[in-house]
View 1 (cartoon, rainbow, N blue to C red):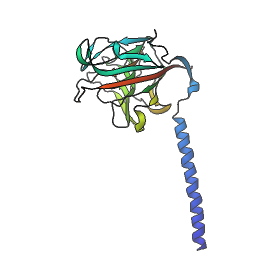
View 2: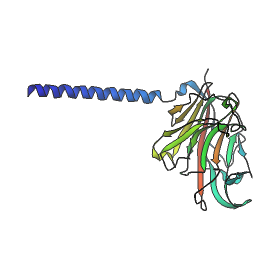
View 3: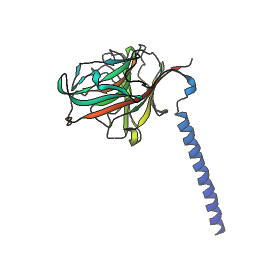
View 4: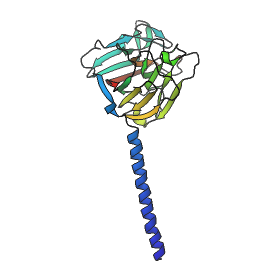
Length: 259
């Protein structure tokens, strides 16, 4: 009996020791996935004060038709310290159609850390997108000439996934993408979506924690701009007669990488 008690006593100590090792290891791992902000310098911060976009932002595609809807600057609203980009069916200039919008930074960039605090709508097919891109991104066969780097997207609703990746050449060139598991409260709550762009890779973050890093796609040597807004799908199989969604941007922070 005494031997059994001693074994139980020692087993309990071993289990506790292993548990502590696991806790320390998990903490060390989570800390290693955190972005080291000491390596960055804040260049600009946009909190969308006022009632309209300032001169640092440019609406895109006004009046243009894209697959299943029209772009309209009327779908942009700045109020209460946030940028609201609507996606809705309206009786606008083009008739009873689905309308939305995209805005971009006037400035372009060649590296840095880009963090957008946003509330993604719970929607599918019509994707709310946060990305870095350029005018020829989806035509380039060489991603070094520019690509569309999506670091926030609502297109995996209703599943608790965040679709991110590097896209270029619509003719079929391979892209590097990843569906990262995140908690299901991703939608309709503010979260920080980040992209670290260096000479060698793109690294994707949510709330300051690393999701994944590219390993085989060349990074762009051409300047890219930041875009916020909706992408229209080529086809839609859902009933969109009453569609009414909003991508809410709370803030945008852009950092340079310290030498």
